[in-house]
Image 1 (cartoon, rainbow, N blue to C red):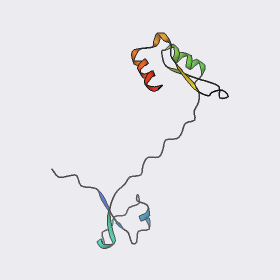
Image 2 (image 1 turned 135 degrees about the vertical axis):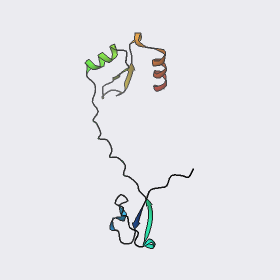
Image 3 (image 1 turned 60 degrees about the vertical axis):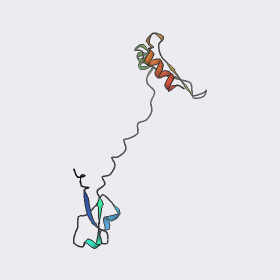
Image 4 (image 1 turned 180 degrees about the vertical axis):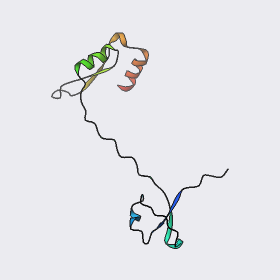
Length: 105
């Protein structure tokens, strides 16, 4: 079984002003001595827009706590500015305790 062929585009490197832009490749085989085979490279996708951080409401935090989820309780910025990971004692399982130990070392 032979390997799959590489898709290439022939670019005239002497007269193509768009050569510096690897996406704007031009097929041209008029003079093979002035051309080079270049693999076509697709541009990376644009980065996802950044979302601003926002704290959840107290109602959402209490609902998550009642449902047995971990909740991070933050200190005031003027104090230590750190968080404590809490969960209701009746909601803890072996798997949740293992996760808690693993991520809080």
